[in-house]
Image 1 (cartoon, rainbow, N blue to C red):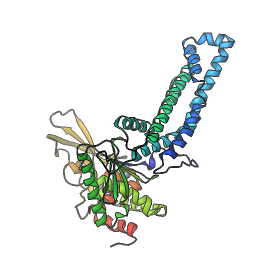
Image 2: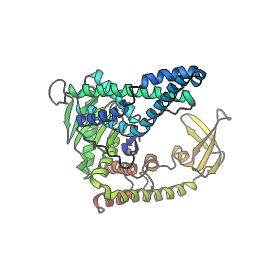
Image 3: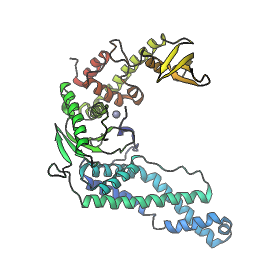
Image 4: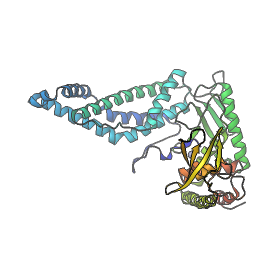
Length: 418
Ligand SMILES: [Zn+2]
């Protein structure tokens, strides 16, 4: 399930509050410029610092021997260190502000293709905060720190100018005329933020309509409102994502229709449901629901243990056949099966028992099995309570949630079972 919530992205230190408004690029730009200003402070002396460090790295003895040069070097080392620590202190807030700023610009303005691509590229930088690991020591280390800082500061100034350009020449999305980038789809407003063709937009609109239809049938259509921004790949591997801080929904579009799109939209709206309609006071129940399913999952695993293959059993997969060598109990992942590839007996594959049973069509997540218990997907299992809730929400809307879980889900969501 290639989805992601931004809940666990960019950990914000306690007490750090950021103003994030869904439709306020100007406000975000003011914040962003303030953050960039903190970086500017040390930028003025950076060229000089780099020159000294470059020379000193090439001829260190000269710098250690002559008092005048030694003082220059000490200052430069100090300056590089200060710059590096400023990044450490400021970057969390800076990256977060940059992330929302550029997302907001994409969401709110109809941009010319060239400009839009620059905004998409800028956004990618803020998606993930990273400070390079510098293994060098001494002068070389300070030199690398100063170089990193200078490059970053340069990009920040470019991004500030870029954001200013977008906002000052702002053209809001409009529903009319040949350059329309906005359309109503049910209770949603679909926004073409990626310069997509009509055909692509119609495809996404179809998926949104289908999702809304399913939500309505499940009495969960409170989540149907607001803008859905259709964008190019912004966050790697995700088909859609929801930004809880701004209650904004993004869908990635390709020319090719992805069969999982409706499911993914429902999943993301499940995050909206948890955040806006269940609210904070149900966080504990969402966790309890996860714990309950986790208990089911363990029961399911125990059921599978009776289905271990014997040495010599055959498995066919993608036109190749394998022979079971043995089954091993592995503390970390439970039971694993070692397989020998028949056409190349030296090649051994090791897979979890669950995967083996799925490939044999014997078990795994067969949600149509009335006795099925456990998580609806591996994703729900691995990613914790909120992701499990979103997955269950999506399965519930598609009428695919196992009976053992529907009751618990309805109790949480509707306060009763139907
Ligand atoms: Zn998710």
